[in-house]
Image 1: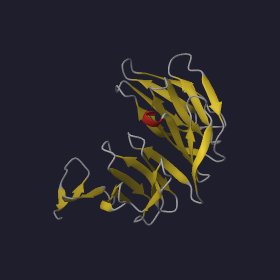
Image 2: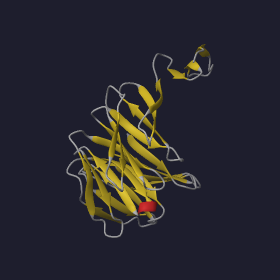
Image 3: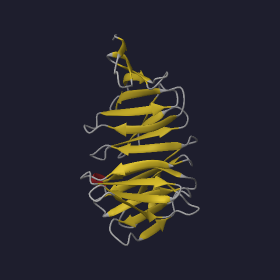
Length: 232
């Protein structure tokens, strides 16, 4: 069972994490190979980092595995979090990686030394993190139903409240002005990064066949693509 996947910048490869390890898929020759085996320390997330020439994996023990992007795919392991590392993002503009964990902490890693420091700590599990392209803001999803925006230079935190269950994922758009969150409450929400104001929300998938609620109303997600109800 694959837990997460990332696509290379040129779209020719993908990397996926699973209990068996990290799998690299090459679409140019339709091959796949396991390049890292976690054994009892399975990777929970893996991403490409072309700036570092590496594939970075976050593992169950809370550490990072830095894997060479070319054969023989040698790996170096580094300790950090005390519980599973679930979120990972590379910020080239700030020359740092940021990770999040069940231990409630967000860490900043220096890719020159692979030393890390805690930039945020709390009681809730932190699932995913993302960073604006300019490295100014970091967004995090948490198990307490709250997402958070941190201004990295000042450490100021703005809470995004509106979900009523665990917030399991967060992504920042390419403009750095909006962030999307998903939750176990079945909704997707869009927020303004600067103000923390909720811009829009939708119920995600309900019913059989599944349905999607958008600004166009309810739509059936099957071959018919039939609109069930039009509305605001």
